[in-house]
Length: 396
Image (cartoon, rainbow, N blue to C red; front, side, top):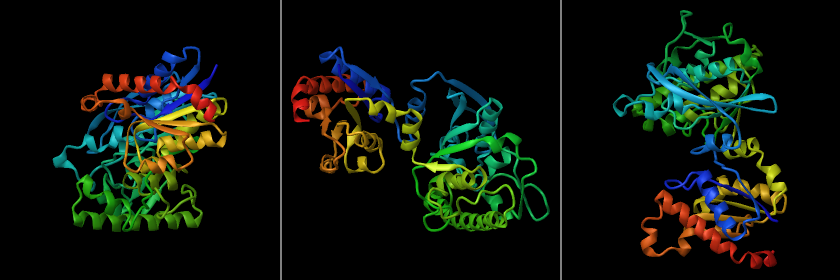
């Protein structure tokens, strides 16, 4: 009996990761009903990450009323689960400070805040969570994470010794930082941040200049925010260099990813001792996919479209990299191929690459993205492929 691990990303617009994985599983089972086939939903830190982290687990969902990006109240949810007697929270910052929460005519990162993100973390700590996996994509903010830190008990004082308010407009006012009210249990928490951008905190490639416009900032706003953030970084890094307790000197304004989510990456690095990691690495570690692959005869991965971008840290490349470590053959399945799919074939990561479109008529391709049709077509493609699996085995 063969053991096969199926770990495919979502086919965006048609199937979730688990739907695609089970379509592959069912297609193989149509031909080989006695094979042991395990499906592991996977994701690279974006869409589908929560499903991937919680698919094989019993999870608890918490919904809280928190401060939204505009300072009003919003409902935000997060998940927690237990692993090795440890309670782990999975939070998407966009739940509390995402761009969709701000009407288009009110988008202005000078005024939006990450305070609600801190409230979600605080609630999770109250629930006994001490390990955090946090996705920081899709933010409406550019406040350097000070809102989140304020919710966790940090003080940011102006020259008169008063606490500043919300938003990037306040950064230039900060002259000192207070740690006296930071919640006590925060020091025992560990933060892994799913971060796939490499932007530094400030400068030409910093968060203000690269992402400020899409969050509603004008050209003048962008310049103002970048200067204010550089001034804030001067203060933070001066405190870190002094050895004053409360700042972690394990990063700086130039650390890749510090500019993620309007500088939220910088806040996690410098104040919460967070670790910025590619989302796919966090997911693969957390679901323990490597252990499963080590015991497998064959691995199947894939995504909606296979092309040169697949090799740039996306899910199939991450899964295939693990399989290669153990000498396991990998088949990459996709809805379609890009013109540069030859790079995937020549990468050495995949034994074979197959696409659903190969077996569809022009008429069928017109409706191939519809969920039920997509699931059935993928199942059919895998059934057809594994009808000749003996040839595959001999070629290995």
